[in-house]
Length: 429
Image (cartoon, rainbow, N blue to C red):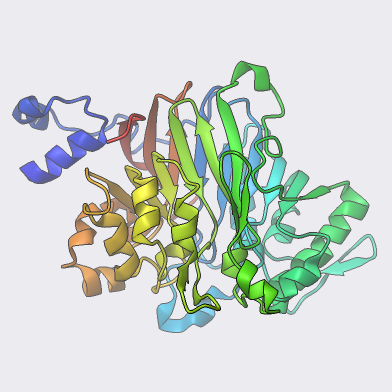
């Protein structure tokens, strides 16, 4: 580690080390005592965000301060068919992603198999599963549906409530997405409603009272979740909703882009904020000829945050306006393909002209092929080296939200071994 790297590490650790004392601090080293040990888990009062790596799709597991839980997306499809564009499937290809995800959840979930919320950000197989991946069919209680993504995870997990962008109107999703995920989720939802009592709600855009703490909300009143985007619309803090496609809809045109329908939220815990919005991205031309970048529109309703998930896996996503509005210290990117974290997206989130200060980019995987291709790029200096062989990324926000840490856990096996830990203050740069 050279002086520049150390100064960056000191800044990322929340300024706990005074920069004028960097020589003495460097001599002491910066290794966290948890490195090499088994992940300690969740404690009441903490807000945790687990970015689960499988090499197949996207999945986040969240634990609210009172122990309420949510599985946000559960991607599953034939990623190996991507050929030379595939990334390593971890821990190994012996199980499908939905099962690996469920097994991970049972290791970190305070309620083991009970999950309060499941949320599908949008109808793409890398977020929800697919009905054309498996040849075998699953019949349960007289109902037939494939085991993929959420439905496979539900073999181990018990979900209480689902948040969806359009259900029961899945015909709306057919306008923008292929049949594979739409058919899969429709069959699964119907089975779960009928036989397991799953409650399914359409996302209420702008609401802060739909996704809530269910166990001890009075103990942590400074925690909230606000729905900021969905179905091609955005909502500001006052609940005012803007349809980004209104002019096109007036002409009878559809977006033909399911990514633009993604649900997004701002999670707040005291001074800490987290942004996630599925694959929210689309560029098109309004009927009057004006270019429209919907991430620019999203920027108008987003506050500054400490941690942000990169939209659409860093695949031709993230506008400078959105990066500047969010201006996080930590970016996390969910990876299942060599075409993720592309230079155009990474250059935007790393560009100090968009917002100043040090930052850390945490992909769940930065494979060797991409490192060889982009190794000399300036933005690579901000990429966590722990991503080189893949890993689960865990954001742990301490009680009250004033401090948080970013931990890489090994994804090579299920040992939950800690690879690295960095500590941060929640105040902005």
